[in-house]
Length: 146
Image (tube, rainbow, N blue to C red; front, side, top):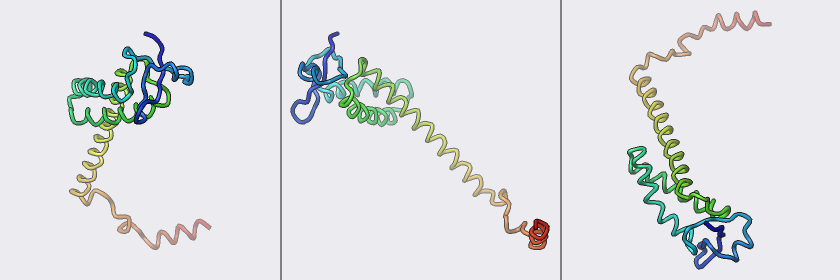
């Protein structure tokens, strides 16, 4: 595979494989198809990434959301630093990490909600601080602290 770089073409898209961009870019991108834009590459890889995540985690909607987030990250990062050697692997890794973060966040939220619902169902479980307050012992503690 030959080393190629990015070049801006019409509508601000980046093209892979331009000699002019290779001269100006310190980081280069590799692609089997010369002249492919990042947008075209992302459009080609997006369904594959959704498929991998759906098979791996079993939730199509969550896989699609995580893939969209990975595509946004790729479009900004790849424009600045170039397309990685294995763009599909990069997208799957980023999307998987975002999906796992979402699952963890949802689990923590459900645990907090369950704890709050248990507390609401059993209002006597939390002691009332005002009920155990005694003016005489508080005054004695303050006098003895001097």
